[in-house]
Image 1 (cartoon, rainbow, N blue to C red):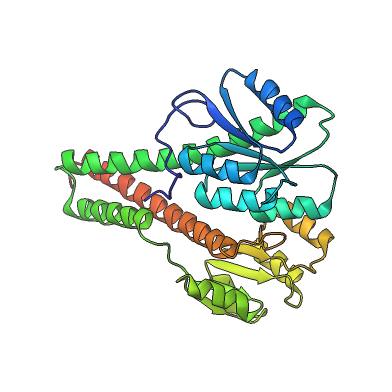
Image 2: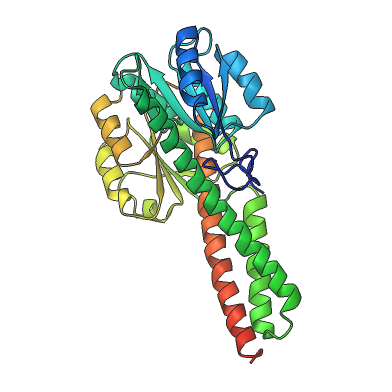
Length: 324
């Protein structure tokens, strides 16, 4: 199962869309900003731009149609831009989000990344070419993910077709292919599994357990951290930065759960290390479980895809040998 809004059956276009047009949703309460974005981006023949003046209007649009990129101002009437990004990515996990902020603020940047944004734009726009470049970069990131999913689906289709036509393969090769194809289908359709290690407060552990995730609290020096699928590391934990650096070269994905008193300089460094950042500036209680679940799903699918590709290669070799 591809997650809701994760499946993109369209082909072609920078956003992976078969319509050749990528869709951009711009949310800002200032008419002049909406107008500038609309005029600038609509000049691109492969972009379709939709405008909204607040988060509530944007959420209605997000519930009814797919978007490739969300551009939202940080300060909106009612629900703010940070909360909107979190809600938008909960609805459409493959969405790329870019936040507009009126000043170069560490807090704003960190809050945007914690909510799931991948970039930000400073307002007022000093160079409109930068806005267009940011949108293009976001579309390229999304297109890369879509391409990876399409390649995985092609491998699965090819495996199924070869099983039907390749009667000359050895029984062992057929059994292995059937087993890995079933494993791939299960990995894509079932809830993701894998142990989550929590280094931090009992509240984080409880939140994950309540969401049905396999989570366990571990001390910072536990060797078992290296064997976890995902490590949730709270900034309130002693020596959390040393732990994060140690895990950078290890197997687990690391989610940094930032508290309200976390040092901003450290969080900016964490972003540069490509740590998954949640918690800071986000009021959504589902942000942590959803981010962990997405990481587990990605890991399980990658493992299943690798095993299926190996089984497919062995099956072809068996066919070439005439089943011997």
